[in-house]
Image (cartoon, one colour):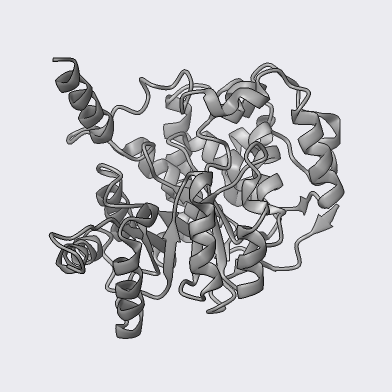
Length: 369
């Protein structure tokens, strides 16, 4: 097994003690965790993440040298609420993440109310002051080459997340990338953003992402990558490593589909060799261990799940031989090969009923009518 040499000591948590205690109370009131998470053991679930003595694994974005934690917090669907819905549970997630050493939050104007919610927490919590904020631009403009919509989106995001400079602004899902990416590069030169990125969550777009990486046009690329879908290894991850481009990973748990497949299955004994005590840590450590990966984005609305996930960026990581063994083990579990045919968040459809789901429901109703 390998110990990641790129680590930093944890921050002081004295100022966050009250937030962590409150997060624990909210998590307890919310009820038990799923069975695949429950295998983490009582210590991980009952104690605040800040009690861990292990340093957090950090990585550097090669083109700029910026240091970020290896585990980031994603906000798609999980942080999308309807106006007036209570946000205490999500506040507890962010509090645990920050107190546990987490340093990256990824959001987007397209994620319903997530961007506004994150901005509120960033402005309220002292421990989030140094959080690296990754945001996105989705803009086609009114006509070819029009950048006015993208500029308006930038200004809106700066107000929503309460930051004069966005740490990373990404062209969302390659939308109008030929216009948006040069604009992002100009914004970086002007000091509005610190890093330029491109994103997508589908493997079919990885060749296009790779071209931006190989041309040296971006500082960060965000792509899907998991123990199930390993296609990024073919060209994108090697190209990013060669170019010094940071890699932010989405879908590391395949939108809870991996957790669904292993429900009821015991964690293999060999997981102890890289200090994984839950299935979530098993899958997250598999991704973090790839040398080209900079930060793995994992979303949750459960404070206890957040506490468990945080342990994936600590301690020993699986080496290349162990990662192959992990894949072979998963290939023996029924349903693993069919994950790509499953709906996202199986069995959790009622859990994420925010603005996005409402809009999708209205669209389906219009089609049906």
